[in-house]
Length: 136
Image (cartoon, rainbow, N blue to C red):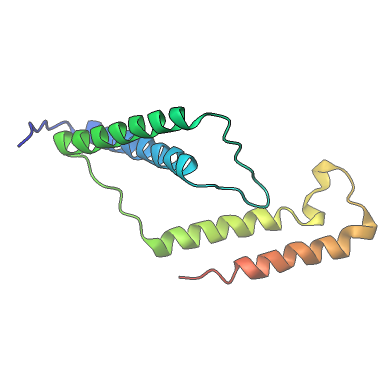
C-alpha cells in the first residue's frame, strides 16, 4: 500500500482541481494524437512525425499514471459529472452562442447586409432548432 498524506481541505481541493484540469488537457492531447478530428470547421494538421506522436503518447500515459498515484496518495476527490447537467450546460451555451450570431446581434461588426438577413437568420435559427433536439 502506498503512503497516504492528509493535507488540509483547502490544499486537497486545490490539488484536486489542478489534477482534474491537467488530466483533461492530457486526455484532449491524447485524443488528438489518436484520432483524426477533422470536421467541417476545423482541420487538425498532424505536422509532427509518428515517432514523436508515439513518444508523446508514452509521456501522456506516464503523466496519467502519476496523476492517479497522486490522487490516491493525497486523497483527492474525483470530479463527478452528471451527464444531464453537462448536456444542459453545453446545450445552453450552444444556444447563447448561436443567438448572439443572429444578424441583429452582430451590429458591433458593422451593418449586416440587408439582402442576406432573412436567409442568414433562417439558417442560424434552423441550427438552433436542430441543436435544441439534444436532450437528456
